[in-house]
Image (spheres, rainbow, N blue to C red):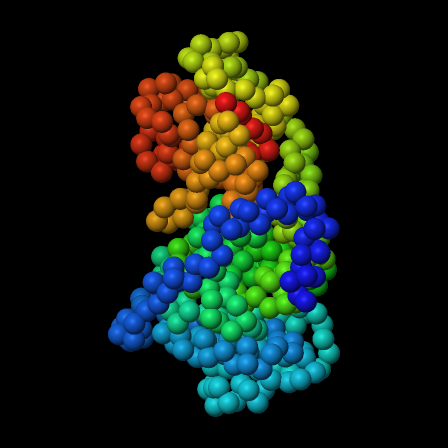
Length: 454
């Protein structure tokens, strides 16, 4: 029955053609990649080594968990995933607002473990209100946010603390999804290192994220008016307080897909995506960003910041090395086979003005298929290439169509600042990388709302 309800929801939102495309793309990526996660499981010997490891800095990680009538079996599995952590300096802070209280299950799993703090909330204050109640129990220096039916890998906190020892205030990890019975793991999300423009398109940090308690307090904790997207709203306020944001490029969190969850069927909670849009609008207001609007994209939970201003930026064309109207702020570098509309050029300039980018690259399509999509560094590689895929492909987690900071771009089909052009014309190779060489540190942005065709 859930399958038919979900299919009906998808048809209503996408229409038949786009739904067929969506299913086709998903099938091409593969539905079951549990083998990939299985390769990451640690041996007992490795976990013992982690338990005996002495960090220079061993902070208490307070896991904040609002609880509201979870399935008992799921809840036990969640609790056991915390109990089995190789890093043992943790605290579990539960705010239970359900009418079927879970304190007895806590006692069964943890006994008298004083690391577990439980609060019976007599009135349901909603997800944000209940989270704030649980947050009041926390005494650790860092706060981890966890749902009441999801699973942490046994080394999750160890890997987080390893990253915190590098001086970060916020650390997030890769994640995947699992079925209700924990038999299948799928939709592995290999996230990029912190990427502001991508984060302004989607809460890609999501699970599992640990944040300095001091920063959460300064940001103002959770806000009930953003229930459904309360984490996104909180994260948007926290990233304004620090630029020390780290990424663990390993799956450490399993998001359980159940019938009523956004992981299983995103259309169950349309209000959550509206709340996300409002949280993003509030971010724009707080930061006094002018001339932009937030639009929800076709898939729920994804947003486009539409740029309405380009200031006084000027443009010159460079086609096969020949410059027209020299003296502009930016050069649009093309080869003679590339075509782009004037409106898409205008969008690229507006994206440059909004982001302050040195290089802007659009989606590049050759004969109806991708030649280039945005590529961001993940810590041990790049987000997936869609080269050769049909132009309507969106990519995993919509990465093919989202604005983002990128680390590698082609040498042709880019908008580049004039002051960088001398470096450009002396550059050898088919791609420019801003992680090394003469372009190191150059700000590069992907603008897929503009398209170059060949």
